[in-house]
Image (cartoon, rainbow, N blue to C red; front, side, top):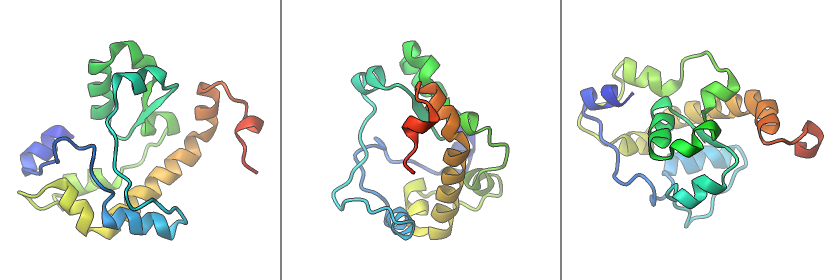
Length: 151
């Protein structure tokens, strides 16, 4: 993925954490009944957070690899959403990169900020994958399905 991003000259903010939630993401989440506080900002994944986590789910394989490189002792608890959900379909952002729908010389954050359809599709796919992964997440965390049930 990083190679595709670099080839398209699409940049990411650095650091990526500490940023407010994109307007388009906030709007799509609100449509799903999820209200995010106005002051919400992403937080860094610190060594303490990694140490205390029971499971870390990344979106991209590259994120998983980077985290394992940074925290090799935590490798067993780092998985991608695709791995744990056993998702075998193409993801919306992979299509966007493959078909060069993301304009060159922009920041990915700007693309996300301005492209509500992209955000809606990506969040819908994440929701589907989390539903598919629900049982495996509970099993990995040592919870039985009745304990993790909200209904």
